Image 1: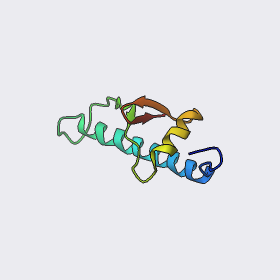
Image 2: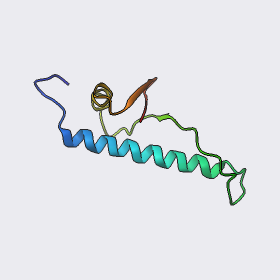
Image 3: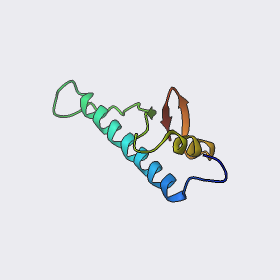
Image 4: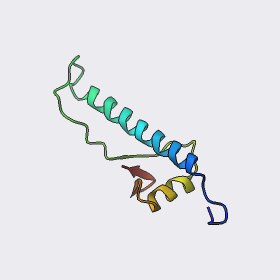
Length: 81
């Protein structure tokens, strides 16, 4: 978005929180599958570094968060913390 029409701080905050929550859930999901179907995992940590951001926020929001240094643009539409 242009400087004349900046993205509201509240929108940026909600987008960042949504990304954090999505990364957390992705890591938990991956860690729960590491045990090969056993009820307990081997204790190995997830190696998820970046995900595709939630679609309810436009690309401009993610670009602005990356410009501010609050998220990392990993390329290919993936963002990380």
